[in-house]
Image (tube, rainbow, N blue to C red):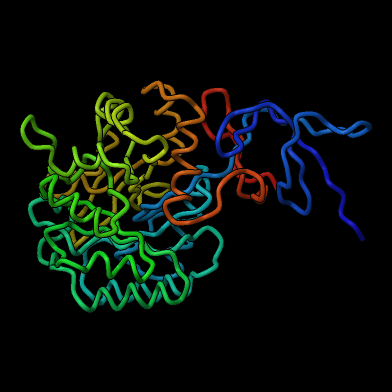
Length: 369
């Protein structure tokens, strides 16, 4: 039996690059093409809203009351992915932050078990190879230079075919270690650092291609010193950013987006914690983290991750920062896919991993299959 092609007609279509009108061809639950006109004699089902690929989030610490550091298991990863799917994020990169080597080992084992599981992209290792001065909420007692044990974990994951992202500070790596990680197949991102612009550029030259949550936990721009922030903004490297109006002022994010020398190199992340799709508090490093006026605050009074979603970031980029809607959607779909070497665009997507967006750019439906 040959399955027939059916057609959908949304108000508009985001094809991974631009917003356009047209018809979407669907066969066996997947999008096979986008047509300007419908073939004679055929009809299409109308859809109210903008059809888009689902969002991809490369930095997710938790969701649905699960926090990967507290429960580094496959079940926790699935709980996190399910929680974020409700808000339009169809695939996440679970993120393990600074902790003991044993916790990293368990997270790596969970990632191996999750290989190929729907909605889980791989593993983001954010720390412990960071700067003490810019550690943020990361526990000081676990911060250490990049060592053979972590290198071995990354090599194991990459050999198994997993996508691996690792955030390091220039101060915590020896010369040649970034190149070693890149040769394994890892995406090396720079962050949580007090490095100079010169130190930062040396790491880019060695193979780092990304920055972790631009502006946050990195040496700032000053009139006589660009710092990591200035080096990141003026580079052609990728840079993740949290767009919740809390971690980065809207004006600063707008400035950075205008200043980037190469288009489509900045992407959204949520840096979400367990409260997304969960309750208003959780425990990290035996400290209670509480949601207060939209901010996650630890016992030291510092921000401890974010309580936001990719969908909120997209809407804010468009309605508050004034970014072109197609550019904002690329920041949540196409660009993060490119960072980790995943295919981009609407064609080839499962309808279950597509979104409908309303006139205010909020997600009205996740999954159309």
